[in-house]
Amino acid sequence: MKTGGIGGANTKTGLAFEGKTDILTFLSKQKDYSVDGNLIKFKGQEVARTYKKFAFYKFLEENNIDWKKIISKRLLPDDSIFVIIKNTLYIIEVKFQQVAGSVDEKLQTCDFKRKQYQKLLAQLNIDVEYIYILSDWFRKPEYRDVLDYIHSVHCFYYFEYLPLEKIGLPVPTI
Image 1: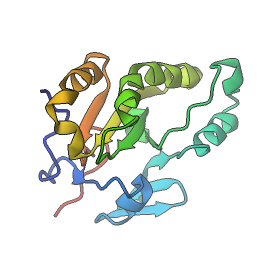
Image 2: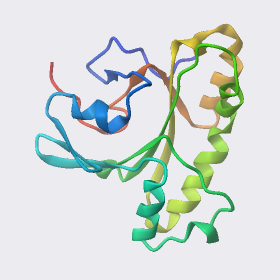
Image 3: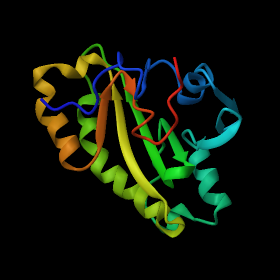
C-alpha cells in the first residue's frame, strides 16, 4: 500500500494533526505562526489564507466568480488553504473514522471534486490540489484499492499528518 506521507513523527516536513482541530486552530498553536481572521502568518509575514465551507464562496464572490455559471452544485471544503507563494489552493478534507461507514465512498470522489474546484479557479489561474488527512483506521488492508486510486488521480492522502512542506508553508523550528 502506498502512503502519501510518512506519519506524524517527522516534524521536519510537517506536523501531527488531530482530526478534531481545524487548520486555523492547529496553525495558530505552532511556533512562529499566527492567525488573524482567515490570514495565516509566519514570523509576521502573510503566507496563506484559509477558507472553510461557505467562506470559499465568499472568496469567489470577491473575485467576481459566479459559481452557479461554472458548476451545478456547491462543494463545501472542510478546509482550504490558498498558499500565496505556490499560487495554489489546497483542499483539505479530514476523514477520521473508527467504524465502517459512508466515509468509505467519499474517499472515491476526490478526482471529481478536484476538477470542479479547478473549473471554479481557472479564471484566477490558481492551481488546485486535493488532500485527505486520514485517521489510522484507513491503514487497514481493505482500503488499499481506494488509497491507490486516490494517488492514481493525482490526489494525496496523509495519515494524521499535515505536510507543511508539501503545501509550501514554512516548517517551524523545534
